[in-house]
Amino acid sequence: MVKDPEAPESREILRRAARILKSGGLVVFPTETVYGLGADATDSDAAGRIYAAKGRPADNPLIVHVASADDVSRYAVETEESRRLMQVFWPGPLTVVLPARETIPSTVTAGLPTVAIRCPSHPVARALLMEVGIPIAAPSANLSGSPSPTCARHVADDMMGRVDMILDGGDCEIGLESTIVMPDKDGGLTLLRPGAVTPEMLRTVTPKLRIAEAVLGQLPEGNAPLSPGMKYRHYAPSSPLVLLDGDCHARQHYIEKQSGNIAIIGYEEDLPLLRRSLTEERLFSLGRQQDLSMQSHRLFTLLRDIDKQGFDKILAPLPPTGGMGMALYNRMIRAAAHCIVHLPKD
Ligand code: AMP
Ligand code: MG
Image (cartoon, rainbow, N blue to C red; front, side, top):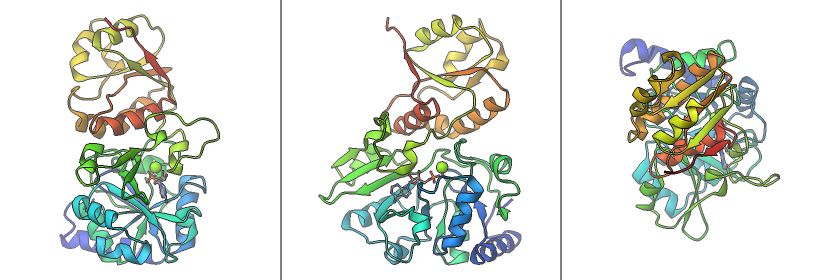
């Protein structure tokens, strides 16, 4: 466990992690979003090991993590817009997609002409990046297709024996992956994946913000999304998840009519009502309805825990799309393979 990166025992662990990375190995580390599965981003073979460990499709590129915005120009071609974004949101949960330089091998970019770059704020991630002195390519540290890990237990469940080291930094504060944006040629910005840096926050820096089609909907068959990861049925539990679009009473009415071994994810406020007709073991709280940060923090843990219990189906509320809701909505429609039931309104 690396709690205080400055403590001598932690320094020694970080030095060991840096040695592994420099010799082409894989190190899992905590970030403020989710745990990352890291390798030297300038070493094609090392990056290749990430795909093998995760079972990740070769056409799904990795995010390159850097210690500071000053390092970006070595790996990517910056724009005025990207510099402003980095000034405001780095270190933090924002990834910027920019034209790649030749220092980044095509294994990392999956052959795209662009590279995704982020400077994380988590103290352990920062200390590791400073210690190693090279950029770290790191996607989420889960097996491909399962929910991103938000604590070391999730990582161990998926990755034990597949990586050289796991740094345990406790629970990830945000719990959903970073926001991904791509500056456009006209000075605007396209949102490729929503996260804790919300559209409202991005618009304070770049008013011209487009939302990529795949963020809130399903792309027609055969269309390539701007962010390759968006085409996969990501974050998915093995029991089918169905999202209910309706208020608390409409959801309760629908849930009461269901039969079988079904798990119910509800808002904290819904639970007293649901407890009248359902047993405790089937009820899971996502957090209070207005507390989107708590819901984001809990979502992947909840999906993993529910999955272990082998329910036939999972029912959950469809999140709103405002603020941090857009990130939750995006992950949940993917986890549900776009299965939404629109309930009658009063
Ligand atoms: P993960 O960290 O596991 O969420 O994976 C990184 C995500 O970043 C993938 O889903 C990719 O779609 C996205 N990404 C990485 N590089 C690029 C890029 N050059 N252009 C667009 N999206 C990217
Ligand atoms: Mg991932």
